[in-house]
Length: 184
Image (cartoon, rainbow, N blue to C red; front, side, top):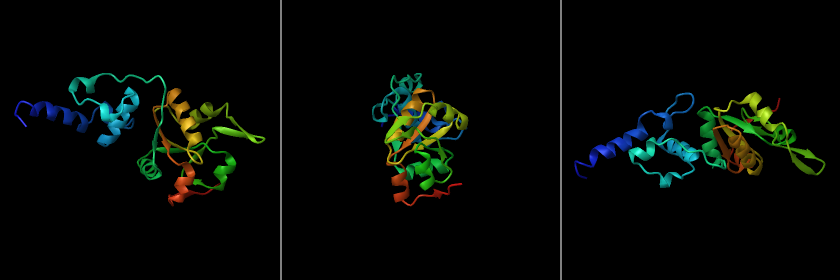
């Protein structure tokens, strides 16, 4: 590596390692490099594989994507996020929730059972707003992951910024023997 290219490489690396807007959580905690890339991808609509490390590209203001697509993580990563301070939103029905749920989960059904059909909970966003702020870090799960992906997309579209879907949902959570809560 030549002497001339070293300063720009150091500048590019330091932008990822030093605390700045892109690698701090809303509570001021420093994120690992992969998380700050994840956050930048989420706001710019560009995957981290295609991010330029040039100083100009990094310093540009993020562009909001027109369609919010939630990020999904495996259950073990979701547990790490929970331990790091994320809050767990369980969007299953109250009956499913009372049969078993992750420790510290808050149950707000995304769908209600009406007869043999499931219909969207018209008060879902209002109920979420009672328990969560738009800048809270939320992991969201359902039975297998379909409802949670839909709910996460709705939350992102309505202004919630740090929403992560749990891939595989509660079934994967319990199958992996992760911490369970008790129904009250």
